[in-house]
Structure formats: structure tokens, C-alpha cells
Image 1 (tube, rainbow, N blue to C red):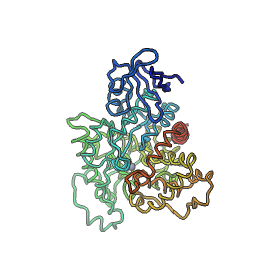
Image 2: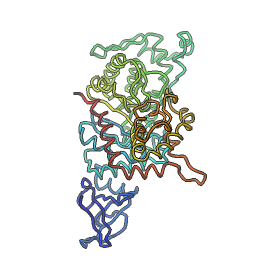
Image 3: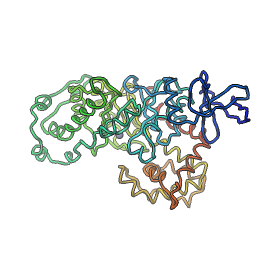
Image 4: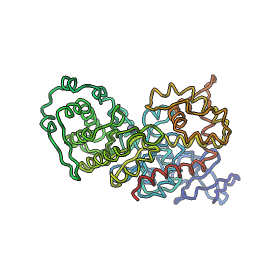
Length: 482
Ligand code: ZN
């Protein structure tokens, strides 16, 4: 590797893919630095090279990220969700996964990544900001010379304040989470109860009640009275809410500030194709231009493990959902997509290669698997704490984890620890406790695990990139049409 040598004898390896005219990134041990010609006006330390030239050495902070985005537009996110057929969200919660992700997308250039993708909950649990998450992506894109574009997703934002926070941080995609406006109580009601609860809405009745819609390709959507009333009771509020956010925040004065995704996936029951149709038709009629909609598909999309459910039914419904999306001209978005290997081929096929696939937590699992491999005793500490923290964490996730199926780590050799990541129950144990693990502090207010984990991830970053190259690469290859 080429080196930068300074007059004061300091030496740094230059990342070969980062070399641009008058600027590059170097490895300074515990951190990376940006090195530039002083005339580019990066903030930082002025230093003389052994070659007699002057350089500015900059820490990778927000001001430096902003300057990079000014100078190289490909280091800034763009609206790829709507403009590219195949996109994949890879949420780098920790800020250490992008190098591995970019290797995947260099290998599969037909898929464009949404590198920065974080929900408010994830920001809180990792003590990060939207700006910080985006800056990590910008630096990784620069370090790897990835010039073909990426997106940034304010994921599962729920209020206009959260939407503004993401937009003002430069995010190019908003995932509008309408779950608080979806009435989960309706599904368990009887037909009579639904009829009693329904309030007349002559406008919607004239559009949908006892009407059929032929979408082509053999797909016909129709609403009998019960289905119509249930659908209105569950989804009408969510549609109006999404419309308000779109018109007030995302696309004020008819000019869109970002791509818009409407997510109705975080509900108690799957979205029936008819209900998906209703949401899409109403949004379209009201002038809301969505790039993607995320229904909740049949079966279970639990965190960090493969699909649970009837594959035949999934394929059948996916075909209809995909036809609905094509009818209105947006892409389907598949959430909780980590590790859903058994449904990727049919998803790729039925969407005809136009999709957005979201993954996130599996990157964390790979990061902890790396710890199990490289520092077994640290892993044992984390694992034991996760068992204690599981109950608290399980309040926030829908999982069916059975802790009794996880072997006692004291009975395992160091070499057996990584195999825990092949066990669905121990995957979920580590998956859902991530916030508690990262935030645990001792009596003196010091992090118990976080600093040691980050230090290990820095030391073994090449291994981590390779893990992700294989694991996320497996996702990408499985969903691409053969
Ligand atoms: Zn979701």
C-alpha cells in the first residue's frame, strides 16, 4: 500500500480506492484521517510532508463530511429509491459496516444501496444522530471510491417533527410509519361488530363498496361489504395521516424534498392484497406520490432469522401485491428482510426485479459473531448479560425466542461459540438486546461493553468487511433474477 510520510516521521497507509485529485483518506491506527491540499480548505492540522509539500490532516467530523459532499457529489446521498429498479437498505447502526456493504454493491452493481438507514429508536439506542449516521456513510463511500450513488433513509419516522429532522439532515428518503394510525383492534371483531362500528362514508362507498378492479395478469381486486368496512376501519386514518405528512413536509408546494415510502408493516396482522390496493388507490387519488409501499406480508418476518410461514401462500400473495404496485407505478418495499433467504427468489421473480429490500439487524449479528470468533471471553460476558436483559428487550419486538433452546455458554468451548449464530433462538437473543448491550454502564458511568466492542471492530475491520461481503452478498444474489 502506498504511504504518506510526513517530515516529522509519521507514516500512514493510504486507502488506494480513496485517492482523488488533491485528497485521499489514510489509516492512522485507531482512526482514519482525511489528507488534502490546503487549497481545498478542509478544517484540520497543517503538516509538512517528507516531500516538502504541505498537507491538511482532518479528523472525520461533520464539517469535513460536509466539505466532502460539496466537493464530490457522489459522497452525498441522492434519491435512488424512486429512480433505480433495485435498491437495498443495509442500515449500518454502528457506523462500522459500510466498507463491507460497499464490497457487495461493487460486486452487484445492479443493486443500489441505501447506506444510511436508521429509525429514531435506533438513533436513541446507539446515541447517534441522523447527521452522524449519514457522515459515516459519506466517509465510507469516499474511502471506497464508490461513485455510483446511494440513498439515506429516515426509517420508520412517525411524526412531522421526525420527518423534518431527517429531511433537514439531508436524508433522501422518508419511511412514513403509519402504525399509530392503523387500528389493530378491528381484525378480531366479528362481522356484526364491524358493521356497528363503521361510520358511513359515501365517498369511499361509491368508489369501493361492491366494486371490482381488474389489474390485469389475472389479478382482480374486489370489496364485499364486510371487507370494505373492515378495510376502511383499519386503514382510512393511516391514509389521511400519510397524505398530511406528504403535503406538509415531504412535498410542500408540489416540490418533493425526498422519496416517500408508506409503511404499513408494523401491524398485528398481515395486509390483505385488497387492503394494500385500497391504501395505494387512495394515496394516488389524493395526489400522494409514493416511491414504495411496505405492506405486511403473510407469514412471519421475525428479526434476524428466515421466513416462518407458508411459502406457497407467500408466493401467491406476492404476485398480487407486486401487480398492485405495478398498477400504480411504485415498488414494493420488503421490511425486516434480514436473513429471509427462502422468500428472496420468489420476491425477485414476482416483482420482476423492481423492489426495495430492507435489512439492518443482521449486520449487528455479524459484528457480534466477529467478537465470538476473536474474543471469546468478551462474547461470553455479552451473552450472559443478554440473557438477563432479554425480558426487558422483548417488550419492543415480536419474536418467539425460546431461551431454553440456547446452550449454556459455560458448556461450550471457545471454538463452538460462533455456532451460536446458526441457532435462531440465540440469534434473536443477541439481536433484540443490542441497545441494552451497547448502553450498559458500570457504577462509575463507563460503558461495560461498548468501548471494547468498537475497539475490536476497528482492529478486525477487514474481517468484518469480509463477513458482510459474504452474508449481505448472499442476500443480494438470492433476490436477483437468475
Ligand atoms: Zn418496517
